Length: 281
Image 1 (tube, rainbow, N blue to C red):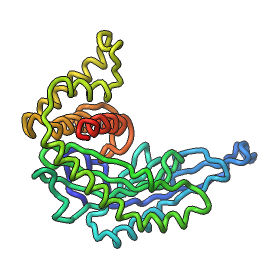
Image 2: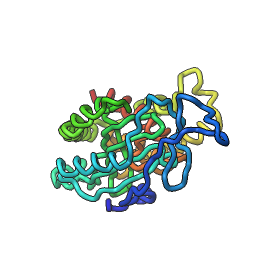
Image 3: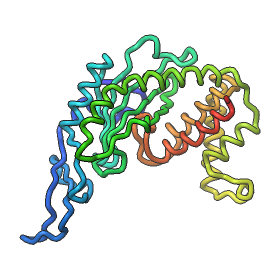
Image 4: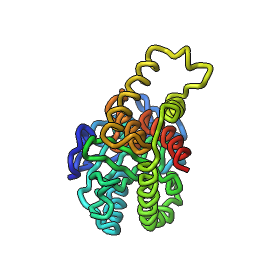
């Protein structure tokens, strides 16, 4: 099992012992929705989604087999599973055990190759990256959008291609490693903090003086996270980046997922990350 890092792995498991069942929708003995079926969890009979008959589910047994193949290809260890939105999205994590990739600017990190699948049709089948800095359990993850596969009858060839896309994971890590070094060498001032803040919280110049109490409090928390991280990591863009991940990992309310791959945390990280890349380049 992957090493525990704060609350991030609290819901992870080494088992994925349920699957989905396509089930026709009846009321009494009458089928009430023609051309559609319910996709149901096998363990608790919960309806995960209503799909058209043309939708082809990717079963958990297939998901586990694909993850096993990726584990053999990568040589990574500590296979764990995580569920999001009551099982509508299933994730599998393989821990990168390469000693060459377990540090970021001198700090220890846990890095993961992530395989994901959605049973509600929202994400398809996809690869992603995730990393958690051990000193603070700040998490940052990205879905590799070029490798998303839709749930279609002809997805098996694409799945074989996905196994070969392991190199994309390494390239993504190389890009991030170079970016982190650049971040470490660029100092920040209040104007740069304000720019990233506006991007993350969708604040325009006209709204700045009329912020809601809730958003104002969120920004205060965000700036406190920046202060915490820049005090430890330096008054630079790298400290600013981890101020962002500290806020989304520890202070942002709502359902979370290991690596902040989905939801509000993911969206805020993406906005902040794009703004930070503009500072670096």
